[in-house]
Image 1 (tube, helix red, strand yellow):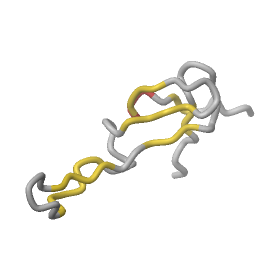
Image 2 (cartoon, one colour):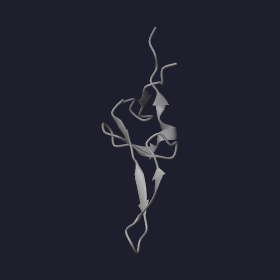
Image 3 (cartoon, rainbow, N blue to C red):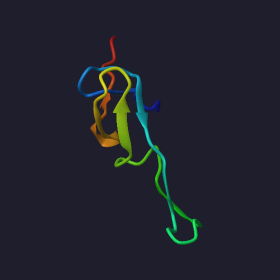
Image 4 (spheres, rainbow, N blue to C red):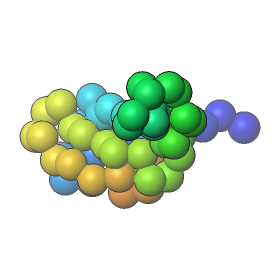
Length: 66
């Protein structure tokens, strides 16, 4: 099954991004973990068309035309 194309919930654009967040130890700078990955539902999301900001879970699947 093919994954749906995700779009901005405000303007419907496909030009959306998600963020990958790494966490580091404050005193040593040592890498601690990859705390958020781009496919996580709570990954920060941004629309490059209207500058909407939210989370990946807020994105909408593109409406398929028959």
